[in-house]
Image 1 (cartoon, rainbow, N blue to C red):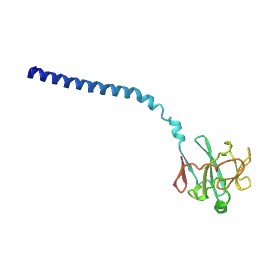
Image 2: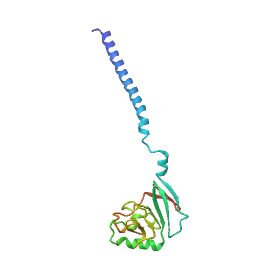
Image 3: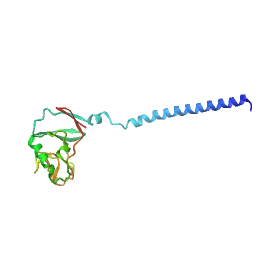
Image 4: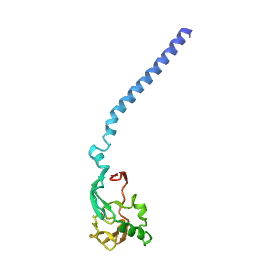
Length: 176
């Protein structure tokens, strides 16, 4: 084998390696281009993303009143609690609770109680300002919740859920 033959062989190997790498790169880009639409279609649609969070103006809710909004297809209760209701909720922190949570753990600002308005027993919507504890009452199976949304009596196993929320300012809350 002469020097010329040896350099031609090295040049062929280098060219072959380049062609393998180039073909592999083109193939990878082709597979990724074909797969991207399949992966992208699994992202939530615009209408679902719009439901992911909701902003609520709190300035129109007077003390002692509850409003119900829809978030992700579920009712959410927003209660502007009075000082007496807050005091009652804090006093009940030491009561015998099935699902122990303090009022402070359930509220970011004590005057605003925000929770998913669904009974944790079978998913009914409880009635506001009813029941033995001054909070909510589920007439379907008799669950009683206090003014902090904690289960106090009946078959429900847990407190009403508190969704993720943040106060954007003094009069606006973003849920979700």
